[in-house]
Length: 120
Ligand SMILES: [Zn+2]
Image (cartoon, rainbow, N blue to C red; front, top):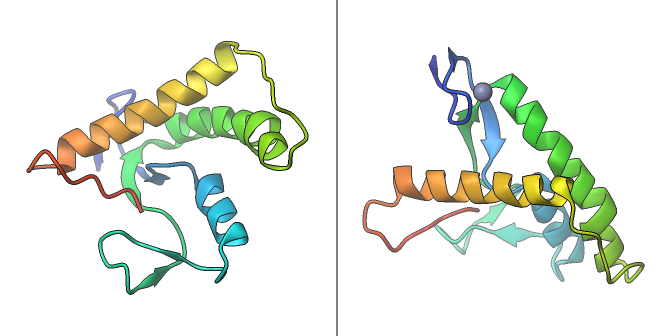
């Protein structure tokens, strides 16, 4: 049992992506080799981005909804040249805040030297 980084409840934590999974899925699908590599060991092919026990199920579900919104309504339409302009509303704000929250907190907890942020 550990403490959820968002709500603070002591519970079993989900394995959370620090950067959303759809980013790695897209990177793999558009890679010339079909693979992605980790910054920790660039000679090694990895299947996915870094996942750590970070959030409880409820908070993971909350973040997942904002990720789905961003992925389906902004990221993929933009990558597919279907849309270049988007409304900035609370859903985009919440998605961006959730990514910032995860990256900053993960870096704070794991970046002892103040230089190295490994997200893959
Ligand atoms: Zn939680």
